[in-house]
Every structure is written in structure tokens, then in C-alpha cells.
Image 1 (cartoon, helix red, strand yellow):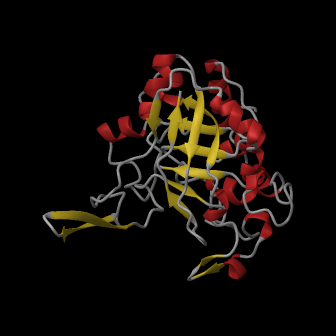
Image 2 (spheres, rainbow, N blue to C red):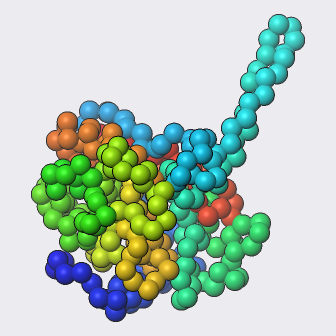
Image 3 (cartoon, rainbow, N blue to C red):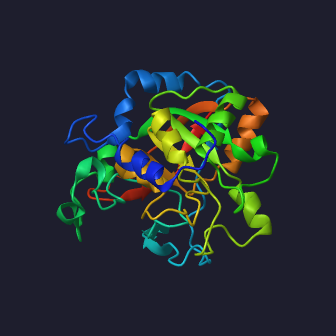
Length: 304
């Protein structure tokens, strides 16, 4: 990739001309996850060396915050159980899309004027009872694959990606080369932008509706060329995108069939990769089996 900011026409070309519609059949509902077969899972398992496990999930966000206007709910019941026993039960309630919950976006989550994944019309798909196309239960076997971490702060020598310096696709390509990792079909690409460090000295990431640091729309070309199945990120799309499009990097969902794992906690994984001096690992992502769901809260686990 060259290091020129794409024009508006080039961005539209990434979304409309480079899309994966029909690649796995017109009725496909799992998208780029098709590239994960038994051999890919075995490859991922073979990457486990130390056995170190790292959770990529944030805590269940029950506390209201500027980036969490609809906090998750958690209620407890205490029950008596004769003789002289008892039990505790819970209720969980969560509106997980947004900037607070670690969650997986299914292929029915977003679309543009040309339609959803594989060209489906959202008017025919989205109902009050759920989606009848591209919903999260089609990933019921989980996403278990080779993960790679691209550490933007370490490459830049700065604590976090800033508003004045979005993360570009050509930079991610350069980071992979600098870290000595190859990009292979069916990989999960984890892009660490330094969200926790940003929060230490700035308003909470995602709390300012006028803008947020993150991945520039130029990353679309990188994602398509990498042939990854999943993007795992802490900072998400750079906003404002600077283009007259409804979705920036999130367009990878309906254009390429790539799953997006939003609001990942990647600082612990970046620390672990740096300590072990390797940036590839086994990644497991297991969504709830919600029929018709547009995604799911998840607790992804990287195993080094």
C-alpha cells in the first residue's frame, strides 16, 4: 500500500468494488469466517507455547459514563433453600452495541444504500423479533483462529493514537513487517491503539460525539488485502471519517463479511506479547447463541 490518504472515490471503490459478495455463495451467512477450517484451528492451537491466557474483555459496564449512556443491568436475588441452605440468582440486561461493552458485531449489524452482507435488503431482514439474515447464531461454533497483535503505540514510540494522527492501513502493514509477523487468510487482526493510556490524560474515549481517535478508512484496503476474518480493536473507527459515507471501517462487515470485535481490552495482550517477544497466538471468541441477534457480548481469550 502507498502512504497517500485515499480520495472519496477510492474509499467508495474499497467498499463497492472490492467486496466479497458471492465469494462463498449468495446464501452465505458467516462471511470471512468461512476461511477458518479444521486446519486453521489446528494451526492456531500449535501457536500455544507458554500456555499464558489473556482476557480481551472489559468488565461488564454497569456504571453510567459519558461513553456508556445505557449501562448494563445486574440484579441479584437471594433465595432460601430448606433446611438451612440457600442460593443466589442473577438477572443480566445489556444494550451492548456502543463504546463500553466488549462485543462481537454480526453480519446483519450495519449496511449502506447498497444493502447488507451479500446484498440483502435490510427491509426484508430486520424485524422487531430479530434478524433473519446474517445473525450471530451462525457463528455458534465460535471463532477460533490465529490471532496477531499490531502494537501501534510501540511502533510509534507514543502512548496512544491521537486525534491528529489516525491509524492508517499502510501503517498497519509496516507494523506487521516490523514485528516480523505475516498476514494469512482467516487470521484475526488485533489492532492496539492505546485506549487505556488515552483515558489517563484525555476525556474518556468515545465520550466526545464530535470526534475520537482510531482507525482511518484507509484501513479498509488493508483489511481486504489481508483476507482476515476478524478485526479486534480498542479504538475503532477514527471520527469524523472525512468522507460522505455512513460507515467507515465498520463497512468491512457488509462489504467483506469480516466480523468486528469492538471495545476489546488490548493493553494486557500488548504487554504479554512484548514480554514474550511474539505477536501471534491462538484466539477464541465464543458469542452467545442468540437467534436473530445482531451480535453478542464476548470474553475473547488469547492463549500464547
